[in-house]
Length: 346
Image 1 (cartoon, rainbow, N blue to C red):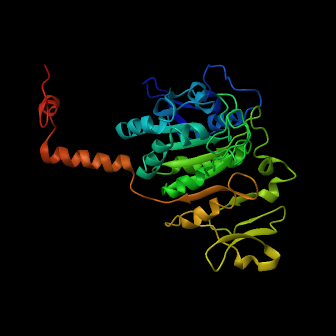
Image 2 (cartoon, rainbow, N blue to C red; image 1 turned 60 degrees about the vertical axis):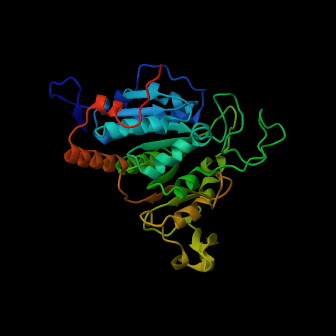
């Protein structure tokens, strides 16, 4: 893929993953799943065909939020939970940019929960990657909004009493237009999902199961280990019956009382299986699929749950501005500031 070199001389260069690596020392714990995600994203970026100066990574606070330092693009390490809000302002004022939000389960779903759900419902042109390790890693191992019930940590020595969030369910619940899930160590699958997210117009939300080998090691082993992953990864593929297992012997079907359930294909036949439709306008079926597993504790769907079209917030706002300008002309800032309800103090 050839891209402008950013020097204004019209020359074109072929970028590689190496071109997206910054000169900063990567400072995560050895063995952290963040390394695999960083490598996958750096390797994927050249396929976009976008110059580096038109790509921006915005993060909040947490281990994952060091990400912008390591990308040789523009970026901002912002404040706790507010990355979607900051990225929204950037996206709507600079529609020529490709804006990516990097966040974690603590950053996005605790103090940042409000900002996340409103960015999703507005359908701002953002790509949001949520690294979910089900723990607070940066602050040394407290339970997070996705930690399982009964989780024993430094902040919950007798076990967590909080029922955890399912990030995919949260995104589908606010009717996000693109919702997907992948795994840090599955580079091929993650790259495929990133490509679909990048192509989506509007907010693309991708949950990435990410191992924290220091404070929550092995949380996703059922989906990752060679002897268990075939029986626990339910790979969603558009237009295909939902099957899984080493030989595709298990599947998912929709029952007469409108539930999804796991079945043995030999017992029900392939014709009884649910055919995945990621473009289905109504999100209820995708939501039911997200509830098959609450946190990788059994057979768990990965892939694209939903990919639908809806007007993009950035475009709607631009249309309003253009319509107002055509009707009233460009306003004067001083007149705006001193008009209407104002008060003089002193």
